Amino acid sequence: MLALQALTPERLAAAVPQVSLAEARKLIAQVHRGDVIAATSAIRRASAAAVRAIGSVPSLEIVAETPSAIDPFVKYLLAAPDGARFEAVRIPLEHPDRFCVCVSSQVGCALACSFCATGRLGLTRNLAAWEIVEQVRIVRARLPRGRVHGVVFQGMGEPLANLDEVLDAIAVLTEPCALGIDARAITVCTAGLPVGIRRLATDAPKVRLGLSIHTALAERRKSLMPIARAHELDEVLAATADHANATGLAPMWAVTLLDGINDSAADARALAELVTEFQAQTGLRPRISVVPYNSIGEGDPFIRSRREAAFRDALHARGLPSHLRYSGGSDVAAACGQLANTI
Image (cartoon, rainbow, N blue to C red; front, side, top):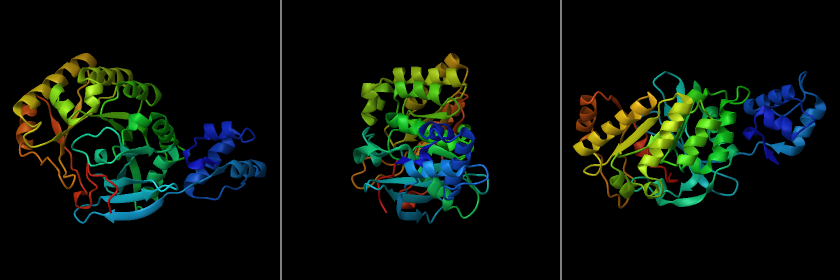
């Protein structure tokens, strides 16, 4: 059976030839309104029956819905029909009644970044497109008011390691008949897979790119992020520049500052130099997002940097503004780097 919530009208019409594209749009709208697939004045009875015969709307179990006591973040622990568990987070935005959903793209993660709780789990499997879309549908259905304005692929897993399913999910998220989210309000974050970065530019050119850079010192980055041993920073930045040149979108560069590890004046200087080089190549200045470190539990070798302000001042002195990300939900392990299937 096809998972109907993972189909665009075009894909539904291709899968069920007797359904016209106009009918497919109406049928996909029924799916995302929560309606029963049924004939209407615009959908023939035979078309509705054909879709019911080949498709269904599978669901995820909400194992736990855990609101933060300190901010409006909510973490969802979800279970797939095969028992696999993964998490999504509802993030409040500055505009009242608007929310972003941080979605997972894999169950666990194979990249093993040393400062990420998900990396400790290893990789169980990729998520299917419908499981990604369903995370957004669940959060949307449980909003007390307002709407889902954006989506960030920054939950469990490396999105570009599951790019086929991620792209299929993005097509549904942005489809007006489905979830109707502006592609420019979707960000795909990566630890640095060059082939995937370039393909994202080609196949989803309006979606924004986030790069988890963490330090511009290549050897230091390798000690924190094993993937950097397979893909040198220069290789990753070349792909990121290609993405920027192809899409016209400035990337976001995320830097999680770890006390005494990557928060030195040398780190700030190296990052500033990379930003300057990138801007010279592309005409676009990366948006620097400084991320406060969140503890990842027992045996955590890191603490939050005490030099956040000095690091940002060093960037500012070189004419480079940065944004200090508010990383909420830490009391329920919903903050950046903390997702590890906990209640």
